[in-house]
Image (cartoon, rainbow, N blue to C red; front, side, top):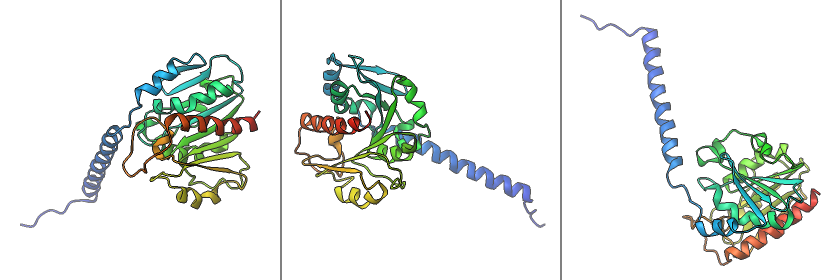
Length: 251
């Protein structure tokens, strides 16, 4: 007695079921991986900003909004995208200085699954959170900067912290500020220099002595990173100064 051969429909059903299982396992794996090892914000810097009368921090769910309490200078804003698996709160203290000093409004996004490259939302998902802003900068740290490059066509300027573009923006004419850390072991100054041709020739490149990858936020050390010799206070002051120059170009 010979065995019956599976018909074409049965074969397709088996293959389809197998692919469905593989896809399901892949999705589950991404969900589990993205939810583990999330780098939490350190509480002390957050508390210091919360106590600063010059800065208002509002949790809008999909993003944190940092606004100047005085209400002046709200014409320029920054949509900032965190690095991979780093909490949005980890960047509040680094960006609060330019909010207080320059009146910049900052929207720090919460990427889907804590990973910017899995988040399809554009700038228009976040800019309505600050309706008074007339000119928008887009920026990000590490993988968040890579995503920011992808959204740069909808912004008036781009800022990169320990990051570089995969997209070619060399002919965009955008004002660009790219900040690197001399001790960064993850996005090294050499990596950033190698991708510099993808940015406009007028892009400003700054290497901060003593800064490592984690110096751009308050979330602790990262594996593979160099050792920072700059203090958090010095790093915050440096970022405030550098962003002030970029903001001035848009006013």
